[in-house]
Length: 58
Image (cartoon, rainbow, N blue to C red; front, side, top):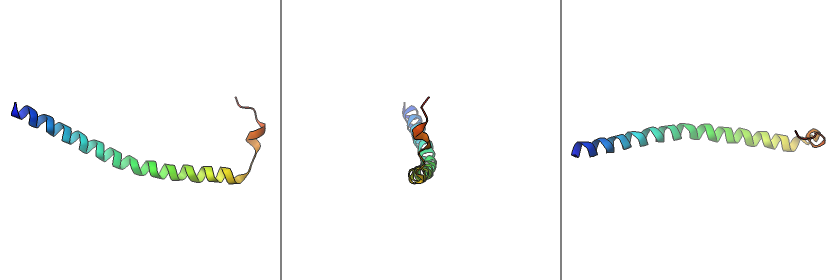
């Protein structure tokens, strides 16, 4: 029974370590993509082209 509990705790610990590493890696990708998307939307807002206002949406 003791080894079963130790095994479960070890599996949970490994799972948290893997999830933490994935989240840490994906955080920077998310941060950079949010900055790039914000710059793109700022550029589109300041360009002032109204070509899309006259076109009907499909």
